[in-house]
Amino acid sequence: MAFATVKVLTTHQWNAGLFSFSVSRPASFRFVSGQFVMLGLMINGKPLVRAYSIVSATWDDRLEFLSIIVPDGPLTSQLYKITPGDEILLGSKPTGTLTLDALLPGKRLHLIGTGTGLAPWMSIIRDPDVYERFEQITVQHTVRLIEDLAYRDMLESRMMNDPLIADEAKQKLVYDQSVTKCPTWIHENRRITTRIESGDYPLDPQTDRVMLCGSMGMIKETGALLENLGFVEGAHSHPGTYVLERAFVG
Ligand SMILES: Cc1cc2nc3c(=O)[nH]c(=O)nc-3n(C[C@H](O)[C@H](O)[C@H](O)COP(=O)(O)OP(=O)(O)OC[C@H]3O[C@@H](n4cnc5c(N)ncnc54)[C@H](O)[C@@H]3O)c2cc1C
Ligand SMILES: NC(=O)c1ccc[n+]([C@@H]2O[C@H](COP(=O)([O-])OP(=O)(O)OC[C@H]3O[C@@H](n4cnc5c(N)ncnc54)[C@H](OP(=O)(O)O)[C@@H]3O)[C@@H](O)[C@H]2O)c1
Image (cartoon, protein in one colour):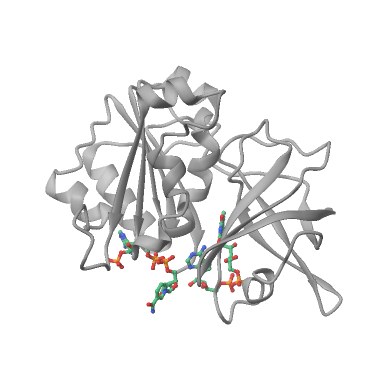
């Protein structure tokens, strides 16, 4: 696969295990909201790359990513050290199933993610197209700790600083957080699977459309719950009522 060398522009540390960064966007780099791309570093003279969902909007001239730091992870144990001016490798062919064209028309869109599975939603909710297609768009983010709620301020302010979509986001965007491992969190603290199973997060295949991104366990269990409710998995070639992407193993 071909890789471009791009410059790191900004970095932001959310907590000890989570950071985001932006890089310059090659003029030829095109993507659809919700896609991922391979990126990485030259390590011991060899390219070491991993899949990363694109956080930024399709029209942005920078590309932003949200990354876990796995202490013994071959890539992220090095990647977290990048600073502005450094160079990273960026693949040329974004791809992925989490795109709006893989879904049938519906009323409400649920973007359900755990951990860094939030990343593709940040791009989708900055796409004006999503507000044309749906009456309501919910970002459902489940994390262990409050400090894992990356982009919380932007989401709580419903993208107020984003002139292209601010008015529509104010009307249509809902931010739903679950924090599962924090005793002082007085709001929702249950896994999305528990909430769907109990009927407290109602989903109807006639009107709701769902995108899933996160750990293998969450995807598998939530996918099974959706199938039981009558949802059908979609893809570009055959749009359905839900789509998923395994963002990491574990
Ligand atoms: C389609 C796709 C999209 C992805 N998008 C992102 C993204 O936007 N941001 C991101 O940080 N990672 C993302 N990943 C995971 C990413 O590709 C790497 O696994 C991650 O960067 C860690 O790389 P590593 O070499 O340090 O460790 P790896 O050897 O790749 O992973 C080691 C272990 O760490 C755990 N792990 C890896 N990634 C994560 C994660 N994101 N969250 C929680 N646990 C994890 C898993 O248990 C894994 O087995 C994505 C993966 C896929 C397949
Ligand atoms: N030791 C630590 O303190 C610590 C802290 C953070 C991360 N980590 C490690 O770092 C890695 C990534 O952690 P992460 O927090 O980004 O991702 P994660 O382990 O997938 O957890 C993210 C969120 O997803 C929920 N979840 C996990 N499995 C689920 C399932 N099958 N169905 C529904 N919801 C599910 C978790 O709830 P639950 O809380 O109920 O599991 C948590 O709220 C993991 O390997 C983890 O072991 C360790």
